[in-house]
Each structure stands twice: as structure tokens, then as C-alpha cells.
Image (cartoon, rainbow, N blue to C red; front, top):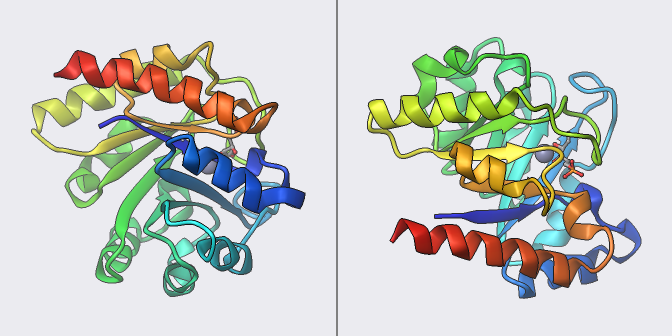
Length: 223
Ligand code: DX5
Ligand code: ZN
């Protein structure tokens, strides 16, 4: 299944409600929420109050990307705020196995993310414990960056490993995904696309529709 996950980091926060409604009405079933702590990544973004506020105006699947050191500390709070999936960075968890179990025990879908310079092999031991792997295609922390080309090879490699091990895990890609380059990520094997600036800069409805049309094409090819 191919999915678009608009990242609200690229949205206009002064009209967040309308922007979320626009992407949802145009077909985006996921919403990607970037939580940053100023420690794991240089910047600070949103946290529990914003997530619970938008939970009231959206029935989309809330995919929470934790760019936070030791995110296990926040699993319960993020769940309470309305998350459906919590995705933690391998680099941010000393006891990754424990943190992933914590998320699963909380009744949420489990995601694990890796930075561009972290090889996919770092996830070998936990691949059968996750619903989603997020391959960062930029160094996390900011929107509107250019994607790093070698991350495409990581997507290809991971897709191959999952196939060999017969595991059904989503591959999400995040950072610098645009309407122009999106096919490269899909061809490499990603099936969930995160996009911030390419969705929200300009007409969010039009941009979402354009992404959705490409995803439908890939969906049809699979049948
Ligand atoms: C970056 C965040 C992304 C960001 C993507 O660290 O994880 O989700 O919003 O933004 P774009 O699509 O503009 O690169
Ligand atoms: Zn993100």
C-alpha cells in the first residue's frame, strides 16, 4: 500500500486547521508529526499540546516522528496526545529493544528511524519487531533540505532484506521528497512518503492530489 504522509512542519501554523483539512480532503490518510527536542537534533518543534489539539480536528493516522533523545520517556504522553504510531531513532535509544517493546505494549504501531549515515544493517535484530522503518533522506532537524542521493541505496538494500526475510514492514522516506523526485524513492522500494515543503508550499490541495495520482499509478502497477 502506498501512502502520503504530509509533514505539518512545512505547514503554515497560523492556519494549521485548514491546512490539515486540505491535505486530508485531498486524500492523505496519514499526518506526519515531527517532535524535536533541541538535543538529538539542533531545533525544537512541537510536542504533546499541539498533537492533542490537532487530534480534535483530524481523524487521520498520526505518525509521530520522535527526534528526541531517549524517546521512551514520552511514549505514554505521546499516546495520550493521540498518536497512532511512534517512530524512534535507533541513534537516540541506548536500549532500542526495550523502547520498541514499550511502544508496542502501549498498543501503538512501532516505527524505527535511521539517519543518513547509519547503515540499514543496524536494524537487523529488530526488523521483526517493527511496522515501519523510516529511512531519513536528509539529516533530521529541518524542513526544506535537499535529499542525500546515497540514501536511495539504503532503501533498495532494506527492501531486499525484507523480501529475503519475508517481512511485511513499511519503508518510509523523509526529507527532500518532491513531486519531481518522488518516483526515485518509490522505484527504490519506499511505500510511505513524508513530505513537508512540497505539500504545503503553494496550494496544499493541488500538491496532495498530484502526489496521490503518482501513488495511485504505483498502486495500479502492483495489481
Ligand atoms: C526533518 C523532518 C521532516 C521534514 C521534511 O527533520 O523529519 O519530516 O518536515 O520536510 P521536507 O519535506 O520539506 O524536506
Ligand atoms: Zn519527519
